[in-house]
Amino acid sequence: HVGGALKILGRTRLSVFPAGLQIGGDIVLHRAVSSISPGLQTHGNLAILRCPELARLPDGLSIGGDLILRRTGLKMLPSGLNVRGGIELRFAQIASIPADLSVGDYLDLEACQQLESLPLGLHVPGWLRVARCVRLRRVPAMTVGFSGEAPKLAARWTWNHLERPGRPRMAPGSLNLENCRSLEELEDGLRVSSTIEVAGTLLKATPNSCRDARLQWRGVEVPPRVAFEPQALDETDI
Image 1 (cartoon, rainbow, N blue to C red):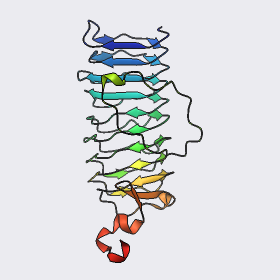
Image 2 (image 1 turned 60 degrees about the horizontal axis):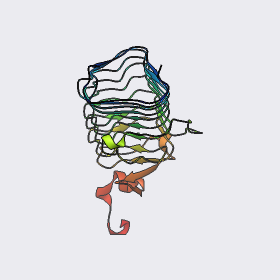
Image 3 (image 1 turned 90 degrees about the horizontal axis):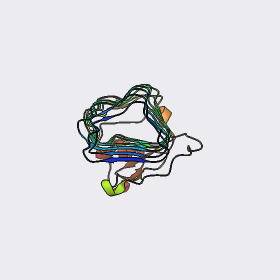
Image 4 (image 1 turned 90 degrees about the vertical axis):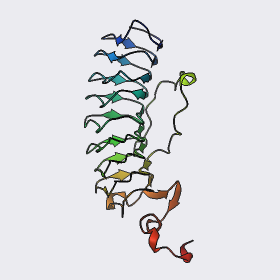
């Protein structure tokens, strides 16, 4: 058991993160490991940065804060993953998200170009970004926002000197679908409490279950006619 933070920076003799460790603070693994043994738990945040040989995470991983995954070799997220904060997994080669994923804040999957599906019934209490997920064809019945009180999390981050900052956070309850160029359908039952960014998609409408969500085009709030029928606009709409 380690009561505080744990940072492993650069190549060491420790290529496999050992089993059963419980960490009280943040964990930062930077160019460090190729495998993580089962049983890892942390009450803080976990950042895995530039570990291209890391192909999978152990099932049942429990994170008390945010999970940040950048430039790893991951092809999937593990089953039973429980993250009380948010998850950043941008530019990854994953094709799907496990049905039993539990996330307490945001889910950032921007530019996961192999991503083909999201799980039915997923609840993302914060915001969801799947912009530039070019193989995603539909968004199933799921919930973005409607979170109530935000969870009390570990203080955010002490590792930013190692990497460029991530993309800006979005407003709670927002769904960003920008440049999902294969996206044709939002299924009825999808609920979004704030805004839906639809620029660069093939969408023609939103389902009745999204009737209270506001539409955006490149960050600007627009009515449905502007979002889905731009070819029908004339000078009176400008």
